[in-house]
Amino acid sequence: MSHLDLVATAKISVMTGLPEPRTAGGAAGLAAVLAEPARAVVCVDFDGTLAAIVPRPEDARPAPGALDALAAVAARVAACAIVTGRAAAEAVRLGGLDEVRGLEVLGHYGLQTWADGRLESPAPPTAVGEARRRLTELVAAAADGVHLEDKEHSLVVHTRPAADPAAALEALTPTVGQVARDLGLETVPGRYVVEVRPPGVDKGVAVRRLVERHGARAVVYVGDDLGDLPAYDAVERLRSEGVAGLTVASAGADAPPQLATRADVVVDGPVGVVAMLQALATAIAER
Image (cartoon, rainbow, N blue to C red):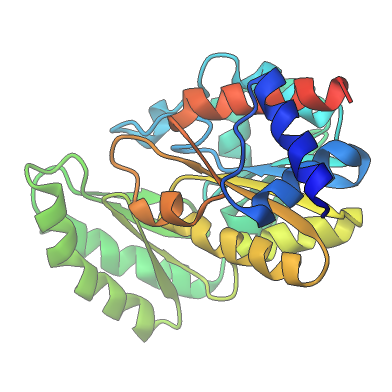
């Protein structure tokens, strides 16, 4: 990417309100999206990124303006996708995502694909059923407020409602990890959660498959939690293979600092994500 291209991208950022990337790789990624949106994919996490973190996962809803922003982006790029650890159908239902024409939803870290009202989903492995039984017993004996979220293909131990969520998580994590290892599953940490899921699936794999399926030459990934780091890794590897990339961190009040440290752009939680998506759609339209 030339110096003139970088300057042009910075000017566009100023004019449209689009955040200016703080890295050369991020600036190149943004410039590639703006230059050829028809060969770009935009991927956005759901919880903590599009929707605020809430005590009860079933209460999560997209930030105001999110659906309009997604629709504006989806109409202008090769693909716009929600990439989430939730079941795809649940994210669609909670978020009203079926209202966004052309949107794809990759659920369970990419195990599931929802598009145009159709869901593709494999059966969960039998090991998850045994993990469900053992983790249910574990949670029943844990501190008040600790509970198990059953996502069918994976299981999440939540400690946020506990009196001391950090201490509860620290106490439970070794045992949860042992359950996973015994059954050939893996654990994924997050904000006052630890998830047990089948190995070999993560958001990085999902992002790469999306890029390859659409023949994209540029990719944007927006996330907020530790489970989004594999997607950041994928964007960085894709850069080395000639696919331009931009990583964005939704830095909410208790977001892990690892994402903000690595991201090309940092925005202020879901409200900031919506503003960025709106600005991106505007910048593409004005090119």
